[in-house]
Image (cartoon, rainbow, N blue to C red):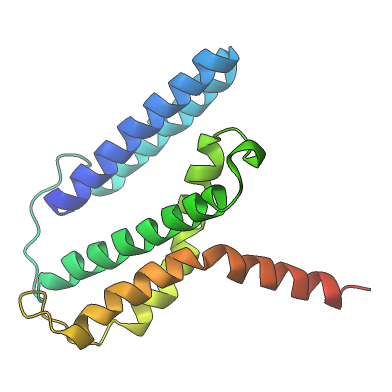
Amino acid sequence: MPLELTAVVGVSLAALVVLLALSARSTGRWRGFVLELAAIVAFVVFLNRLFDFPFSPPVAAKGPSDDFVLAGALFICMLFGMASQFLYRRFEQPQGGRPPWDWGMFIAPVFASPIVFIPLLAAFQNANIDLKDLTAPRLMIFFVAYQNGFFWKEFFDRKQSEEAGQKP
């Protein structure tokens, strides 16, 4: 596994453990935290047995290395769009009518992000974009990624209403 992916997985797992610990501390549900921590440890053991995580030997890429950077940049633009959508919905309401801040509602789009991101990445996979030579038309794909993130909830809500309308 490349060093960048190892770092992303490691930081994500550490952040997950910290968030779970903070949640357990605020709710007092330590038994659930221990079970979740055991699942994370089992996952790390699984990664270690299959991929020698985090000590896997370096892998030499045979293709262009910009693909990973481009995918990461598109994903970040999409996540910014998701966060912007949440903040827009919050701030479009009068201050007195806003619900209290909820971190769960703010973080929830991250769990839907692969569903939104995979079609986006597939659409631009063969776009032949050089990040060193960004022209206005090439820059548009980052705006499309942001737009997909911003409108992700409307897409899911529309699909839900269509499915509810089809059921007897």
